[in-house]
Image (tube, rainbow, N blue to C red):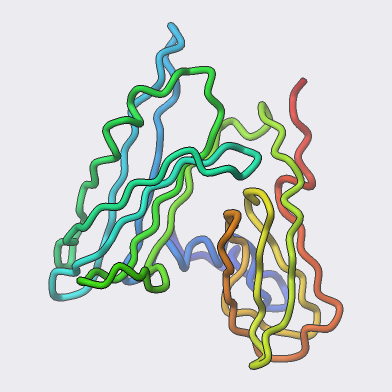
Length: 212
């Protein structure tokens, strides 16, 4: 990603690309991709990596998950890793992912949490999602997004099913984050300044026009 004046509108308000670029250029970031299927229908290989600009190595706990499009968790794998200092680290996806049948339509997620002896996961340092593509070939069900204000004024987001590219319209508030993916069972907390009256949310699930 690159910085550009196109990341904001004429009034100086961030566009969705601004938030996506900021996450990609964060001090700790990760990515998860699956290559396209070949002409014979064989599934393309997975690839995953993480980047850290910190001056020391960083222990993390990686959580890999596969979700059905209805939100049910198909598999979870936890792995303790150490990210290289000021550089990239290639990650190895769980071995059972390579055996998935081509007809299985699902999405995969990777989240990196602070490492340590505790079994309790802290807030994620970075997250990545790999959705089935092209998007127009798939119908993603309504995620039923729940927006509510916390007592301290922050915004809390939840969804009953996976939601792609959630964009929050808050006409009277400035949000710390936006245009993000939501997974069932998680609560995403977004700091904000201003009043949350009149806010609404939309995502790809609501606006897509799937090919029959």
